[in-house]
Image (cartoon, rainbow, N blue to C red; front, side, top):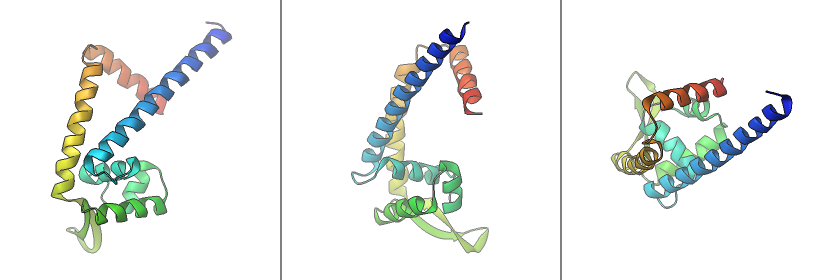
Length: 144
């Protein structure tokens, strides 16, 4: 492959990723509104990090979402005000606190996830397991 064809292929990948990222942002916006009309897409990402147990402290959320403390603090405060998250004593260290999603949040996130997963199943349902595995490998390689 010559340089111009590689450049052209890279350009097509960038455009395709741009379309994909735009679609993901729309999906986050739709999911956020499903959870609560006042919830922003970034707040939805914070909430799902908490609800899945992948990040239950501000520091863990900052690390997971690669963002700053003030943005996370604002989102956590809003999630608490909306009754979606609460801060409770850490069962392993009573001096520390952890963030947990309320039952309401768990219910609404489950609804939003089911809608999203349904759309993904529609889009990817025709792909073979081998194609999906290869796609994941390519995404992993791109993320390194």
